[in-house]
Length: 336
Image (tube, rainbow, N blue to C red):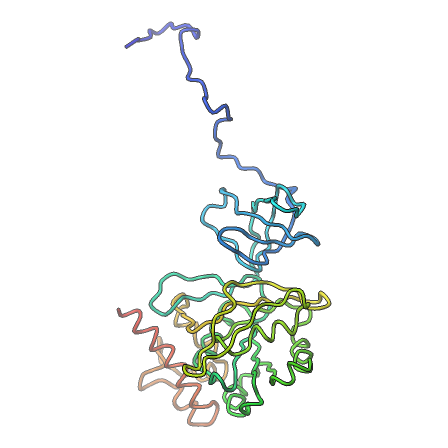
């Protein structure tokens, strides 16, 4: 082995050539101050369709973003080929701060939360009044996720020609949640879409609901004809709908005065990511009754003040049952 003394000449030092011919790596990343602003419309197997001005751009996430993922509704910064031409690919170099986030887990035993939609102003919870039957527990879970994520809830009841909305309206009437009741005939005639549209103008609204409730049918009535999605049917034996929407997609309202985000139908809405102490915020009709609760009350114990609050007629007993059902589910998960 060749050894060098104290007085080596620089010509004696041999440096390995850079075989790849590229520059050495650096920790200094470009700021991309000239990047174009865009909105993520949909995500498909690592490719993101974004809207930049009036062009639809196909992009991929830059490696420098690490594991941070962009979702539908995200405001992003893009560089590269922004022409939107076929076989071109831009690069997302920055994801801007989010104003709201709709999260869910597959179930209450799943520790991994999934961001469904970002930057939505409103969550439209779509439920059928029949075929399939309403699921108030799923509605409650969606309300919890909406309040926790900073979205304003909107209740949309479909298929009123098959069953009246009175029962659900009584259950959620005290919450002062905006609602719209529609029928299949009204959707076909366009009257129902007009009433729903009044609640959506100027906002970004995410639509969520059980499979088969008519969510995508309603979305199709609100967006331009050339952007409409495939719809399915309800199984006559199981009462379940078939998943026709497989990925979230942001679509402009007719007239470009707002956005709707159609999401895949859900059969469960896990809340493993939400602190149980925040669940009560989704029940504003019950929350004032907790003022006299013992410290660190679980709201499901003998000294809970909510029992007296409900007994005095301030809230529907069904709402307290729903709250405790959610909390009990979370407690079982934590104890496993």
